[in-house]
Structure formats: C-alpha cells, structure tokens
Image (cartoon, rainbow, N blue to C red; front, side, top):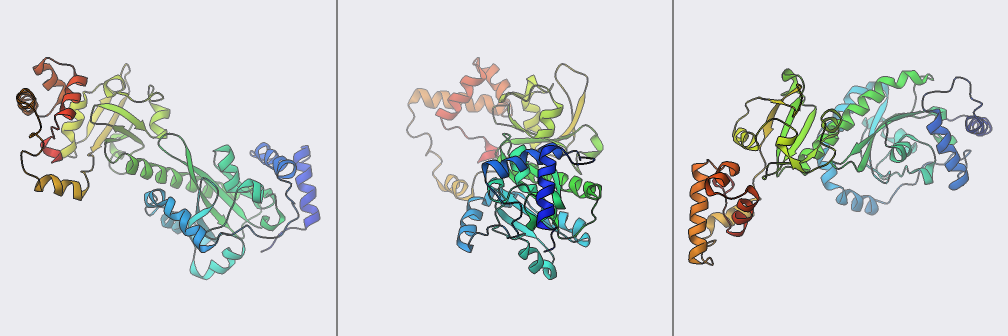
Length: 380
C-alpha cells in the first residue's frame, strides 16, 4: 500500500501537534489531541509501516456471535452504501464498540488489496493499537470524521482515506462505527465531503433499525414533520409501551421534541393524544396528525404494532385448557377477573376507560390484570 516517506510523516505529526500546519482543517484539534495520546500514552511509532492486528477466525466468530443482534439490525445498509461509493474504489466496514471490524462489503477483485491494507473482518482499529484513524476517532469523540491520507498517525495508513460515523443504541450508548475507506483518492480533503455525508446517513439508518428491533414489543410511532415523508422515510421513532408511557426515542426525536430527555413518561405529557388512540391505530396504517404538548408544532405519524409473543409461547397458550389460568384463583378473584374482563371488553380494551368504569386508577388496573393473568384477545 502506498504511503509517504516515514521521516516526512513524523515531521508532519510533530508540526500538527505544535500548531505549525498551514491552513489547518476543521478536525485539526481532534487530530492533534489523538496524535498526542498516540505518542505520549500509547508509545506508538508514527513511522511504522505494518498493518493492523487481525483476529483469528475463532476470535472473530465469537465476537460476531455476541454482536448478532446488532449485525441483524444493519439490514441492507452496508450493501446500499457500498453501491453508492464502489465505483470510486471504496469498501464499507462495520466495527463494534471496541473497534473490531465485524462486517464489510468490498468488490471481489479488490478484496486482496483491501486485506493487505488491513480493511478486512477481524482487523482492530482502536487508538491504543493503531493511533489516529477514522474508527478510533469516532469511538473516542462520538462524532463523524474524515481521516484523510496523512491525517493517519501511522505511516502505514497514509495512503488511505476513511470517513466514519457513530452508531448509537436507543439509550445513547455507542455500539459501533460505520466506515467507508478507499486505497486511493484525490489529495484534497474536500473531495470526501459527500462520502462522509453518505456514511453519516447510513449510520443513522442502522441506528434506527437497531431501535426498532430493540423495541419490537412496543408500539412505535414512525413520524416526520412533513406528512409526505412518513411512509418513505420517517425521521423520528418513539416507542410507547403497553401502559401508554414513552420509553425510548431516537436521536432525531430527542433533538426536536422537548421532554424526551427524561423517560419513561406518559405519552400525553409529550403529545396531545391519548394512548388509547395510538393503540387503536395499531391494526391499521392510517396516518395520524399529532400536536406537540404545549405548542403549535405538529407531527405526522403511523403506528407500528408490537410483535406478538414467540411461537412456542403462543402455541402453549392455544393448547392449554381454557381454565388453566383461572383454576388457582379464589371465588372472589374469579368474580373480580370476570368484572375486569367485562369492563375491558365494554371499553374495547382501552385501559383508561375501563379503569374509570371500575372506579380504580390505571396503575391498579394494570396490576390486577397482571395478577389475575388476563390476556387481551389481540395477544392470545
């Protein structure tokens, strides 16, 4: 793999740390900070021309198995991103939160060249091992970056250009990094702006896919500020549990909607809508227009219904005798169970209305439903 002369690269590293670079780029401060750590804390050699550490097949397989849920949530995002950048000579790699490459997409005829450069499943890109690089910078700073050619700390990678973006869990934890890298590219850093933006957008899609997978048991609002984009590309995801509480929201929703920084909280405190209306919309695909609580802004959304229980549990319920759940109850409990079922049926299984009919709080109703093992018809 081509790289600059080792002596000139060492000089550039020292100049950037000392602030002697002419026309520094937007990420110069991040790079300089990483250079200092690489030299002072990790004792790495910027003149090194060896590639990254590669895990054994067994080690990689164990890590991939532990990341199975994350890998499944990526869907077709990696191939789609690669299709957009492949003609410019890029590969696409996915790293976990430790900087280990757990998946990648590359043209077959370029596979050997990218493997020689270390762009291969099992390669390790943490800063303490490889110094300044795209994946390591994102893992530390949690922001997208382009590390272009001589921006890399080690001389071995100064022919590469890497644009990387973070992937977060629904709770804000960094769970991975998406990266598009090329072996050759124009010298100007500005040439990578579009690639960086494509990587950032693809990382957001993976993030949202992981969100939906993580909260498949909840109702999920797929929302957009423009009603025409709800079906094609919702920007906000809001998970509502069976109690009518918002339990999670994606980054876009948290940035745009006040009140989502502390969860869970009742949906009515954030949106001017009763939870029952959302539950009623689960069976259909009708578009809902929802106003933000205490404001004039509107969202447009459709509701994704929660997934049903696993097939084994469902089959067990179907095959069990009809009296299985009620045999152990006392006569008073049986009477109360019947009263709750009748009220819920009359209220079309809307908890708030049923609670009012029964003269109890919603929390009490939920507790008794759980204790008496009452299962709504749509979950049987």
